[in-house]
Length: 132
Image (cartoon, rainbow, N blue to C red; front, top):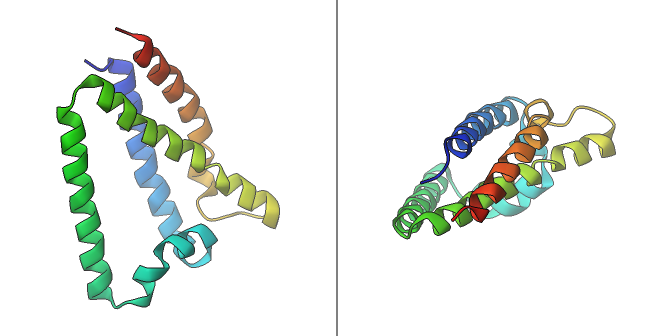
């Protein structure tokens, strides 16, 4: 069983990711971020129906893959939780972009909470890996 603290940190990070996504949407992150534009360029070139279909398909595949991993047991769940930890570290790119532009960068406010949360998250996750 995954510890209560780690489950709480996953819950808190989920809330933060939702708030972060809302901040990015409201501040037009999807129009200015070069990483986002590079990754999602194929979807942006199609029409809205095509983008919705592809998004639905990818989300369905992720649900199936996640369900399979959850059935594999505790070690696989912990490995999957590493992805969330990597995402939290990746969010540091907001600080890099803000320093490069010397101004506010879309998503910076909520991104400032990720390093703190990531520290406690990784600390608890590594502790969980060492537990028998």
